[in-house]
Image (cartoon, rainbow, N blue to C red; front, side, top):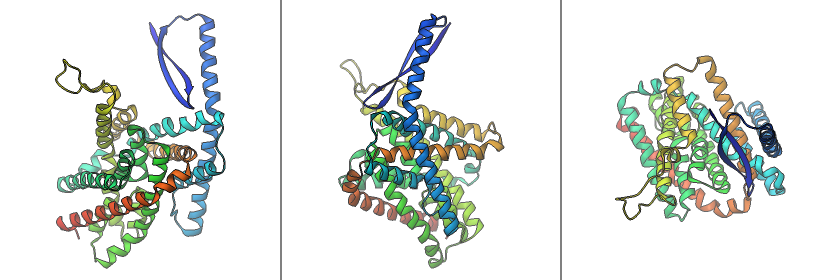
Length: 382
């Protein structure tokens, strides 16, 4: 019999996982050494992870203060976490002993959160919305991604930053940015900048959409579709649509869930593109074309997990009582990972990129809103 063991060592402050096969019956000294390796790895992670958890708790507490003072949280804990992390990083550069845990929280913890998000998406509710609306939502998302990415490149943004903004604007804001980042190898500065600017505009959209609905005399169903296509996060959809009607909130949430479901195919497509561009993917002399790496390299493990949980939720495998706790755990892990991303940000880099990023995000958002409004009118929902 064979068992798989795992060893973690650190290079430039980043965890490197090394899988090795060994015989099931191993000498006691080797087992003791293996336990010592795990103990050292966990000890090395502890300071950075604890710091990220502390920042996440502070962010969640500030969100609670917002709710008490204003009746709702205008700035979510996820955004507050990255702002607090960035502020702390501006005042204090974490020494080497803190970096492994911060890197672990920014990558692995975030990937686990993306997997758990799959349990919050039901394919049955999505298919019940009707084929014309579903197809239209998919087309709007694809067009918005292409337009936003092209606009970002036109403004001179790097490819990775343009991809983050395009996916964040077109799919589900912070969650999309967080999910796409590890696939395309985005830097912490890029992720933080994209989230910061999209978060600010997300609040503006929540405040402005109800006013637009009244000014255009939109129907509750039509406004729900518009809000679901333009607002970044599900809680923000509820905040934007609740002042209009409960029907708007229900329709908006459903449309938003369809956009969230687009995250899986989009990330899969990006992983295929990145795999094709990676070294060694080009064909050799005796090969008719590009040689793709194994499927395990093209499909990130967390995307496979995400799709499996979507299927499990749709088939009723996941008990109803587990859905809410799973969503809360996913939210908490995402907040912790955002704190880690903030701790890896050099605010000076974000500041230098600010004007261009702001312009791209704003113009992309206006374009998305225009296409969404045209869709609402084209389907006769206005």
